[in-house]
Amino acid sequence: MGIRHIAPLAAPHVNDVLCFLPMQPLKAHIAAYICTTFLKLMSEERSLNFLEEIIESDIAEGIHNGRVHTRFPPEPNGYLHIGHAASICLNFGLAKKYNGQCNLRFDDTNPATEETEYVENIKNDIQWLGFTWDNELYASDYFEQLYDFAVTLIQKGLAYVDDSTAEEIAAMKGSTVAPGINSPYRDRSIEENLQMFADMRAGKYKDGEKTLRAKIDMAHPNLLLRDPLMYRIKHEHHHRTGDAWCIYPMYDFAHGQSDSIEQITHSICTLEFIHHRPLYNWFIEQLGIFPSKQYEFARRNLTYTVMSKRKLLQLVNEGHVSGWDDPRMPTISGMRRRGYPAEAIRNFSEMAGIAKRENIVDISMLEFCVREVLNKKANRVMAVLDPVKLVITNYPEGQEELFTTDNNPEDETAGNRTLPFSREVWIEREDFMENAPKKFFRLAPGNMVRLKSAYIVKCEGCVKDDAGNITEVHCTYLPESKSGNDTSGLTVKGTIHWVSVPHARTATVRLYERLFHVENPSAEEGDFKEYINPASMQVLDSVFVEPALASAVAGESYQFMRKGYFSADKDSTTDKLIFNRTVTLKDAWAKEQKKN
Image (cartoon, helix red, strand yellow):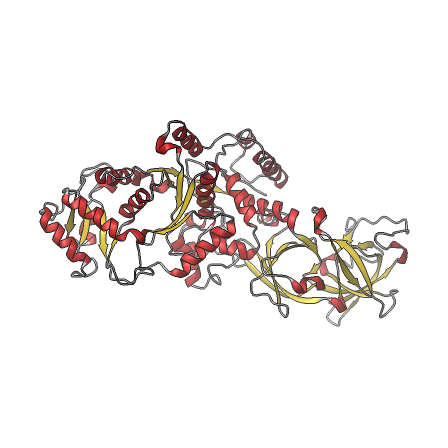
């Protein structure tokens, strides 16, 4: 399975299990043991992660009267990905654990990149993951109040209008070893700044012509506090406010104040915002508003993919994938379409843990969580991906039978179904070898196998076309070997799946592999798209499936016996069945990479 670079976990005994992990891939059985051990520990009482420790300390000290209020604040400029899932599970999970509330607040302060489509998809993703927000809010709800906050800072002499260009502001910023230079507009009078800011709002200036900056300290060791931008001019249509505004607050000014307006007690964000925290606090302190506090945790990175929205947008816009919900994408929509259960993503978020330092988690851990859930919930069905016809020469022509089989041996409540059987069935081409090695226990001349839930058959030979390709495999069956009533006394070492030829339904199957063929494409030299795996999708158009799958519903998961877990695609219909491979039964990828 190959787990590496695993974040520290905060469960009892789990660190004891994981501390020996090497930085190289583990053998699959060892990795599976570790993941299984953790899943068991998840059901037991565990120690607190560092955020839970903070919250419990605040509750004990009566801070905010013991109230817990979190928020999940996505920017609606793209689809959510697996990294966001960690934040969703964390913020909603903490609120639930401490009987608090969690807001869904859209950080919609950049109208050039934000769309209502993204808003709706984000809401769908959160609900699909199993969470419900207490309040649906938008930073744009607070535009008037944020504007008033900015006016207050101008009146206190703590903000000014700057005419400098973006390039000039950057040049004046200085560096980590050199202080910045004051803007020539820094000492404008309060009255002049108030009038200019009002004129900015009124649309009297062009984009980039003026900005509003906080007046802090151009020599501050934290470059973010060297007179940061608070407002910029953007004559763009906003997805909610239309053309009512042409100035928009910067993230650092809007975020903390929005938290304060909502009286968020614990504002949890990813580690890249740790240097923004002093500015977050500065605005709140200078305005004298509700003291929300920011806490940071390490973002979740995943091997063999990219997590940057900008890069994901490139993949979409340049046609490397079919869209944001392409099953190869790390987006929640893509994973849902591929067949990943919401429960598996929640389990993965818990297993990967909450860390204080950046980490990269092997995608095999996520795939393990997917297999664990699907093994318990997915019905077993028969599908032949690379078919060759098997003819049972001594089975009466025209005769048909129905066999009963369990839908899922892991679930007693799953019931059973009937399988039609006939003289001709489709089997996997790889299940027959004309010249088989000694330990090949499937079909070969003279070998016997059991057709799953049916009869034992003995291979008599095969038929080839003029080019030497095998077109049929011929067998005889033992009538007394019927499953459930076998009186043959024979024991065979091989069992294979099959689909009755006259009853089979044709389907298209998409076999997905990892989108990139290197572990960390963002860290490689050159354009990250150079590392796209050309074999990340294989389409099979002549797959035969059992007739029960004719009624498969989009998103419904199945285990194709011996082949993996598959999900009916959203474009699948009764006339054109389409299935996406969610994950293989085992980690075939790691094994293949080891060969290479």
